[in-house]
Amino acid sequence: MALAFDEFGRPFIILREQDQKTRLRGIDAQKANIAAGKAVARILRSSLGPKGMDKMLQGPDGDVTITNDGAAILEQMDVDNQIAKLMVELSRSQDYEIGDGTTGVVVMAGALLEQAERQLDRGIHPIRVAEGYEMASRVAVEHLERISQKFEFDVDNFEPLVKTCMTTLSSKIVNRCKRSLAEIAVKAVLAVADLERRDVNLDLIKVEGKVGGNLEDTELIYGILVDKDMSHPQMPKQIEDAHIAILTCPFEPPKPKTKHKVDIDTVEKFETLRKQEQQYFDEMVQKCKDVGATLVICQWGFDDEANHLLMHRNLPAVRWVGGVELELIAIATGGRIVPRFQELTPEKLGKAGMVREKSFGTTKERMLYIEHCANSKAVTIFIRGGNKMMIEETKRSIHDALCVARNLIRNKSIVYGGGAAEIACSLAVDAAADKYPGVEQYAIRAFAEALDSVPMALAENSGLQPIETLSAVKSQQLKENIPFYGIDCNDVGTNDMREQNVFETLIGKQQQILLATQVVKMILKIDDVISNSEY
Image (cartoon, rainbow, N blue to C red; front, side):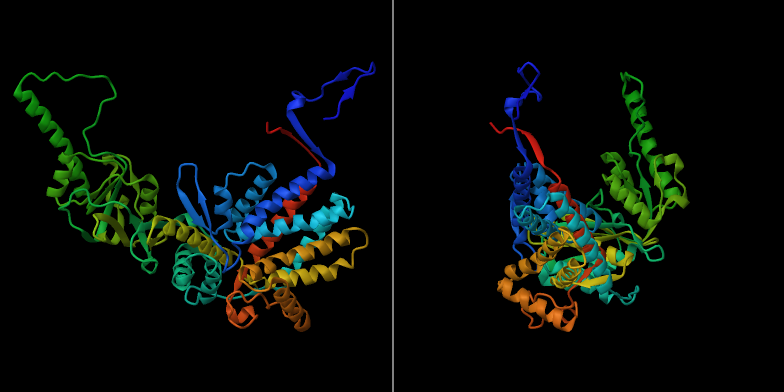
């Protein structure tokens, strides 16, 4: 730390506990920050693309996660460095906004930082580099708009949506049945989408998983799946044309709020009390029967007395159903959640074409399917898989596919994947650099070079010669002036991404470039780091 002296030459302390703090200033601070950002990007670089590798992370309590979703990897990593935390935030914001491209955005930011380091070594001021990056990102985003293509789809013809979702799933562990999963994701989104307003509420899509079966057994249920079974084993397992009473009040005698004590000294008094309780249950069950309910779904439990009565009165019931599930059931069946038995009316009942209980495997695992609902705005994707990790990873992959389908409903434009869009932007940015006088053009050229890092990483992960492959594709794009040529990761034999059906959403790509540029600008503007020292 720099010491300061007063006019009499006596040193005085500016920072409290100054000797216990470390301070990096100027170019050293920027170099250290860039190194931290690059380190995070290097971790994710190898999991980019269809041939990317997965990462295995062990949590503090010993649970293991295997994934190649950028946001999930960075969430699980316990990052200590402040700049590395910015990279984690970067992938999280891409995940919240777009849902896909979380790995690419970090790789892109890492490449921009690497190029910025070279510019700083040349003696260019970091602010000028940041301004150059800002100009270049504008050029790139505008160019993406120009090369994007709109495609038309409707509820009957959703093939383009499926193809784009398949591109997202091809880089995941579930890529062997990406076709069926992409179709499930698109159908789920179209079932809950409001196509007039171009809006999709993903909360209406519930993703449930159950260990066992194959990944191919994953299905889409137009209705709700509840991980519960009927409260009594002798209740009917299948109810057609069900009228459902959705209750949040327990099946038990009312408990007075006051402190009370009941003295029972004779058998008669005990009998009276028991009869009174039985009468309460009788009335409750009768109220449900009177309004025409054929199934009761209750948020709380009920004791054996009530259970026995319900069974005898032929009123199937499900207990201990969670609040979120109750809401989804109410939305799907068009029912109302009833807080008191006195308020039960026939209008408040939900309607479902079929409620059935299904058991899985040799275990006693049972689940309740509520299907053919009156208002099928809520759907469930039910995932099967060999183990828990597989199911968790499939849930993350399905989430990405759902987000991509939602983005396409909001904005119908696509660009071509496989690094084709990045190469096209790189050429456009490089060409635009000459128009800018001044030092910024060095930064703009550096931006163009950084854009090449994504196709380069794709080639590297696919076992191709990175520089050779990239330069071949680049020259092909330049010669024919067609922005569809990308890296042939799957070794199909053609670089034309139209033939390979590799699409990405336009807003996803634009967001990647904008977010990466913003974070890099922020990191470049830091020139003084004061932190508590390690020892």
